[in-house]
Amino acid sequence: MGDRDSRTGQWPMDTAQIAVVGAGVAGLSTAVCISKLVPRCSVTIVSDKFTPDTTSDVAAGMLIPHTYSVLTASWLSMAAVILALWEAEAGGSLEARSWRPAWATWQDLISTKIQKLARSGNLAGQLLVTTSRETNTDTPIHKQKQWFRETFNHLFAIANSAEAGDAGVHLVSGWQIFQSTPTEEVPFWADVVLGFRKMTEAELKKFPQHVFGQAFTTLKCECPAYLPWLEKRIKGSGGWTVTRRIEDLWELHPSFDVVVNCSGLGSRELAGDSKIFPVRGQVLQVQAPWVEHFIRDGSGLTYIYPGTSHVTLGGTRQKGDWNLFPDAENSREILSRCCALEPSLHGACNIREKVGLRPYRPGVRLQTELLVRDGRRLPVVHHYGHGSGGISVHWGTALEAARLVSECVHALRTPTPKSKL
Image: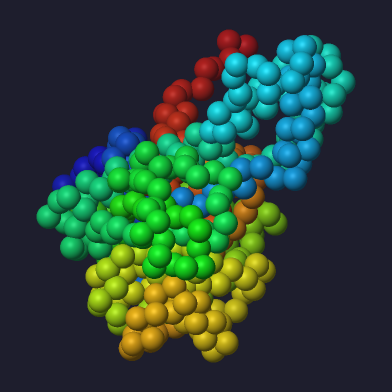
C-alpha cells in the first residue's frame, strides 16, 4: 500500500480506495491478497458482522474439496450429444479409440467442441452454445484444483511456521469412507493432499458398514483463530475495518474507487443474485480429546473432525432453510450417526450446538461488473457462492479476485484517450 502523508494523514492522490464488503474467510483473505498484489491502494473491510459472528466461524474448516456442480443435467444432455458427434467424426465408437478425455478436462473439451460446431454453422452446435450460456455456471475441475492447491500450499506454509498456533492451522490425518465403491476412486485432489492411498482391508474393519475408503493427511483451518489472524495482517499493512451494514453497493460511491462483494448470502440483495440460496448446516462441538483422526462419510453429510480445542461432529444439509437456531432433533441425529462411526463418542462431553447458513449457488461467482447510474461508474468485483467448500479454496479464489481488482485499478489509472475533435 502507499504511505500516508506524515503532515496531513491523508493518502496520496493516486492511492486506490478499495472496499471489501464482508468479513468472512472470503472477504478477509481477499483483502490480504489485494494488499499484497495491488500497489498503492488502501483496503477497507466493511461488514455488519465480524468474527466470531460470521458464517465462517461455524465452518468445520477441513480441507477436503467440495465439487462445484461439475455436471448439471443440462451438461449431461450436452455431453451425450457431443459424445455422439465425436463418435461420428471418429468413424466409430470412442471406446475403440486409443484415448478418452481425462475427467479433469471433460467440461473444457465439451465447451471447445460446442464453440467449434457453432462457428462451423452446425445447427446443433449453435443451439448448444446458446443452452450452455444460459445454464452452465459450473466451475471447471482444473480451476477447482488450482484453487485448492493454492489454498493448501498457503495453509501448509502457515502450519509449518511459528504462526501455526495463532492462525489455528494444523495437519490432521484420517479416513474418508464409502458404503459402496465410488465411481471416482482417486479424486482430482488426491495429489494435493499428503499420502493419499486406498485404505487397507485391516483399516476398513473399523467401519463394518463401509466397503471402500481413502486415507490421507490434510489441513484443518480453525476460523475462530484464523479470521482474527487475517484481520491482524490487514491492519498491519495499513488496512481498515468498519462495522456497517450495506444495503446498496452505491452507498460506497464515491468514497471508494473499487468495491469487492464478498457478502455471501447478502448477494441476493446487494447483487440481485437469485441463484444463491442458504443450505443450513448444524454441527456439534464436543470434548473428546482421545479422537485424533478425522472420519468423513463419502456423502459428506456425516463427519468427525478433531481440532485443537474440540471435536466437530456433523452435520446437516438443509436447502432453503434460513433457521439459525439449533434443532434438538438434528443434534440427536448427528450424534447418533457419528457414534455409529466412532462408538467412543458416546463418552463425549460439553456438547455445544452451532448453526451456519452456507452460501450455495451453481458455481462460485468470480467476475467484474461495472455498475452505472446517472453517469457515475462503480467497478465491482464479485467473489461469493462457495457453499460448503469455502475454506478449501478460499486463498485460491481470493488470489483470483485480487487479480480482478488489480485490473480494475489499472484501468482507472490509465488515461482515457482524448478525442481529436
